[in-house]
Length: 326
Image 1: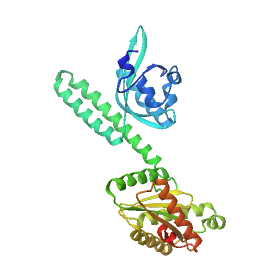
Image 2: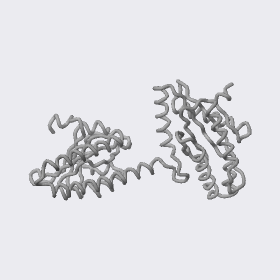
Image 3: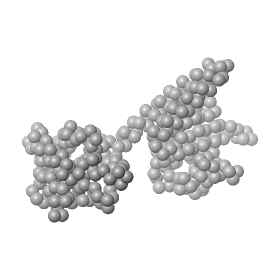
Image 4: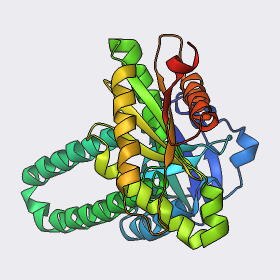
């Protein structure tokens, strides 16, 4: 492989018509953490998730076979650590000494919005090119419509997959993965601006008794109803998520210790006043407000300690970690 191609500022992978990797540059290997022998002579789909294999089969192969090229395909590949890395892929088919080869250039995408912006820019460039080539307008318009349709289908599928990946199936709230991302974002804003925020862990009191007495189906209904209660009473800027089991969490931006305690107390009362299918439900809450030494893990631990204090002091109460340490 040419030295410049080997260290080009983007990934390069060459595959056969069947998808077997025949060549790969060092840039792609470094980016994904693989050694060359781990990819060469392996199927490119071996580093794809099931969803991305579907995208590859429903879009990449038909376009290569029909037009000999693929432009701006958004696809995610798994690195050596099994982490998902998003790429924009451009591919071209040609014959080398009678053997069909497909060259693929992969540009890593950092943010989905960057991808969408690049698609809009590419679309405008294509439209400008169409106006400059009036003699090929009819054929190019047909190709353009097909690309737009496929891109729209791809973006819809990606949006659906992203939403599913961050949503708790039972309650419809955001899941722990989404919560962790938002907590990291909030910490970053805090260290930049100094604007306080608080974290509330909410736990259903005696939830095991609900399952033991009424069954797990009723327990699931209680979890769903509590999720709706949190959604109704949380502020628009708050993030409500399910940590797991009967534990829920709220991220409260621009909220100090006193304010967060009032918000948690209002939620506690709202739960008491809610009509439950099994009589009454109460919750205990633990709160921590960020300080300069906090990481996501330490803030979560302090909120959990405050929750434990609420449980130890009789449940159905709100405790801020500052009250525990006095």
